[in-house]
Each structure stands twice: as structure tokens, then as C-alpha cells.
Image 1 (cartoon, one colour):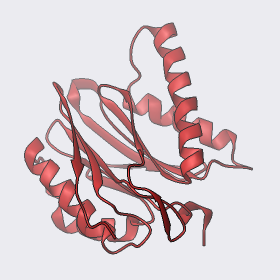
Image 2 (image 1 turned 30 degrees about the vertical axis):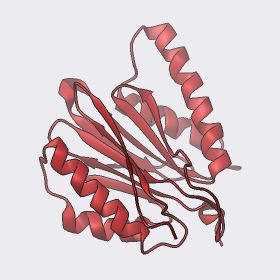
Image 3 (image 1 turned 135 degrees about the vertical axis):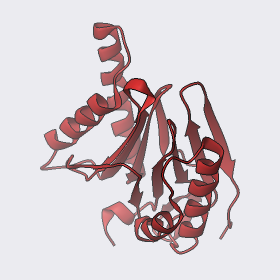
Length: 204
């Protein structure tokens, strides 16, 4: 079993019309044994920027702390929040620094940039970015997430339809992966508000 699959995870970010949603499962396991059912994989960097970290749970927490530290330094120096594109470059640089002993994480970055244009991207454990205009996925359930998102995604969805689409994609995908599941955690971000919802899923 790969070290990336040790704790299990499912992460997806999807773009709508001037909004985006990012969702994850809530299971923390040690291989097939479930340890916790309320594990946090999505972190708020600021009101319009969110970071999801799939992979090894301990590395995800360490990397999150480093990124919060770097973002706070940026805020003090620049007196503004980081743009999503800038933050993606920062994450990529931090991961590539450690390429010979990497953090076992695959980040998903989602944010609203200039003119409230949604930005999503994912990268591998050494910081190679993959940008997308529709959706990005990561984690052990990524294969089934690709299939569900490909069939359900429509461009320019309004925020409520986007929430319904990402939720159905996540819940149907984690049912096909025994290392992720136990409900879902969804953030829906528009230019004016952030909505956080917990999904109930199969508890097995």
C-alpha cells in the first residue's frame, strides 16, 4: 500500500458562476481500520481562499501550519491577502523544496481571484501544478471522483446547483472506495459569503 493511501482521503473542488465549492470526506483511517470520523482536510486561508490536503494526515497538518505561517508573514509585509495564483506558487515552491523527502500530500487549492473569477488547481507531492477550468480531484477516491464529476459537471452553475452537484459526486464516489467516506464536508464560496455544510453518508 502506498503511503498516500495509508489514511485514505477524497478531495474535490469545482467551479461555478463566480463561485466555487470544495469538498472532502471525513474519515481518518490506518489502512482499513477507522480511527476518526470527523477529520478536517479543508482549511481556510482567508475568506476567498481554501486549501484541501489529501494524503498522509500528519503531513497535511504540518504543511497546513507552514502555509498559514507563510501567509501571515505575507499579510504583514504586503497588507493584503494572497491571490489564489500566488498561493498556488507558494505551495508548489514549499513542496519542491522538500523533493528528496517530500510531504506525502496532494494539495487542492481553490479561491476567488480578481473580478471574483474562480481559480482551482491541484499538484503532486513535489509541487507540479495542474490547473483546471472545471474541477480537480485528489486522494484515494480520485478515480471514481473523476468519473462522477465528468458526468455531472456543467459550466456556469449557480451556487445552489453547484453545491448539489459536488455533494452528489463526492457521496457516490466514496461509496466505491473503502479507504474514504463517513460523510462529507463542503464549503461553498461566493463573493459575498462562505457556506459550510456537513453531509451524512454511509457509515461503513
